[in-house]
Image (cartoon, rainbow, N blue to C red; front, side):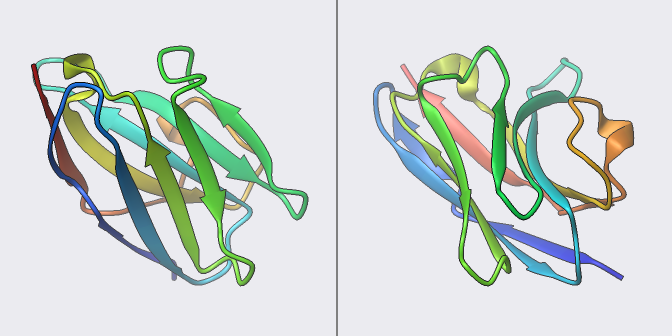
Length: 120
């Protein structure tokens, strides 16, 4: 059983930065971040997959967000720079046993979510 625990959310001003962390217990192939804003569907943000650590990003965060993991692969990070009010959402860490996917259905395990609020 894989367990995920997110941390690092909070309130930041436009243009600021935050780093989210996701502690992982259990073996996974792909780790990802999704987000869900009020009244919107859950959106793919970023994924890191495989032993080589290939990285994938949603179009809205390319060039601003960076996904990474530590050498033991027990913690995944999402560095968020140049934050905008549209980035306000609950951010979820997800894990899957297969190659990366932009779809929620590609992930078997989910964290509880952490709130990120960007003020204008």
